[in-house]
Length: 223
Length: 338
Image (cartoon, rainbow over all chains, first blue to last red; front, top):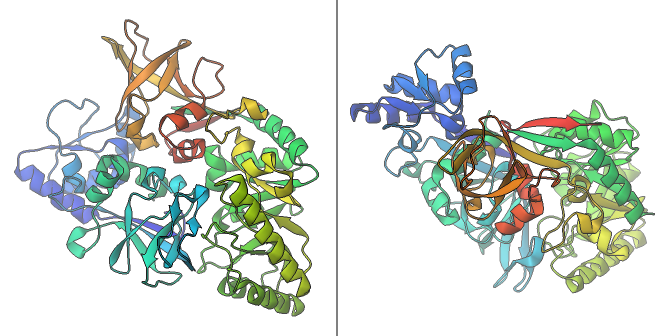
């Protein structure tokens, strides 16, 4: 993560647990391409091996060298042929436990009147008087601009529509009559078992694959 | 994969911008790692060209810049984490009383923000006089310095922008009647700074145009006298049977929806992108095949036959800024000239 304004967390325990389930089904190769789909190449590889994977599928020789340098000794390949632990390893298949959680801080609150436009181009107009929050995450952080007026973010226990165009570093959520404060945490996706929205639903609303969503956020905000 | 960053083009764009917005002064915006072009190298050029204002957005960027940028260059920050300690010697955009309190005692120069219709940040008309009054009190007690008034406009239509500019002038007049004296008033970003003399005021905040990124909808950089600074390249990894695989993909920030909508240039000829995978792009090269390691050009100056960033953005209903700022750290930046 780049600052306290947003936070990207990865559960290595979830990756290990998922690997264990998949290893029991006979899968042995952990797919850690694309920086382990944004979950972090080395630590994801270690977690998958701890869970029972025995070899790794990597993006490039450079990634193989990086793993080697970090002391990961399992065999690697760049050939994607054959069955691998892939989306399911990161809980991106809808069955196993999602490993990535992304949240961002509310940095502003305001109330607008019916008919007021919000953000560039005024692509959103408030249907009625409504409260809005400004959240510190934008397209430069990997929040696809396509999510404008299309995807929802969880805040204060409910899913809130992104109002107007996602900007480079911020987006706006529509709260209706509900209230929120500066410093509150908005959750884009996390662990559905803990009542948080699912990255699978997020990706579906976006018309993207969950793995592409986590890969980009991880590359921008991962440690 | 490598983004070629043409610093000569950046200098040329700065010259065009200065001429176009004079006598207003440009603040060049370097948020999001200088729009993906690399903060430090871009900032070096800005300083060398005598740019007096740099828009940093956040504290992390400002702190990085303060180490290398001379104190005479003003650094503007407008998205600060309230929990962080404010460094000294910054220009700070402030929308609320709470932000004003957080800025006390750090030698900050304050720019008060009025909401003129964008409804993201900025004080409402009701909140504005109270915010101004408190800033004047804290200036009186020496805890900060009030130097600016500013806003963002929505660029939804000329009429909407005219209304926003009028609201801004009303707010400034109210503040001046309260005793405020503003060194700088600013509201325009790239597009309005070029299009509207009445939007320029003292200072214009230029991001996209400095990097040669045009606003789209048919207007390319050339129409504005600007030169694209970034050219994105990727190596051929494999090529056979009409399918050529390039080493760049969604993990680098490219979106899946680019498939079947954009082209890349290889050996001076354009070919359609058919699929975007995690680490690779698949390109339909028909009856041609290419050597491993050959360079493919995705978007850029056009010198190698490639499309412009603008064409890529228009093809997927977005803006060039999104494509360049999504590029991840695996994309190397290589600097040309300086």
